[in-house]
Length: 208
Image (tube, rainbow, N blue to C red; front, side, top):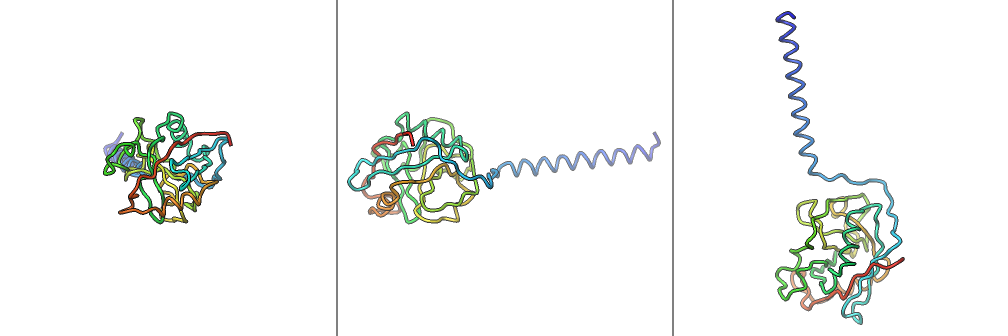
């Protein structure tokens, strides 16, 4: 091989290696952005979640259909925690005009300052984002700034919230008791924390 051909071949190989390295950096950067499942219509499971509030006279019952075809990992986690009784005795610890939020085991203790900061003893659940719009009654998985930090906490939207679209895992929707969710949201609160405990008596998984 002539010196000129050798130099040309070396430059081609070097350019290819640099391009692969640059592509790898781009892929790693983009891997932090969860994919959004698009164009898939939610299909309700043959089981629903039934939330019974401790003060049933005031807050009643909320029934939720679950979408395993959209968020199988989060639905499995929610069902598992419900069957294990993890949600029983937790509170709705955050209320405002957009959402009610609960499911934190920390809320079982007598220290309200740590409510909303905890989760179950199970690993976090990876993001399962979809293009389903956050309309009234959508049930989403609460998380921190880390996309893959959903665990036990969940929230219910009280109205259309376009700012939530494609950013939080959707795993269900309220099919009965939306008025009860809005009643909970209207309870006296300070900085989005209810002044009096709004306790969940139980969440059970029942046949549809």
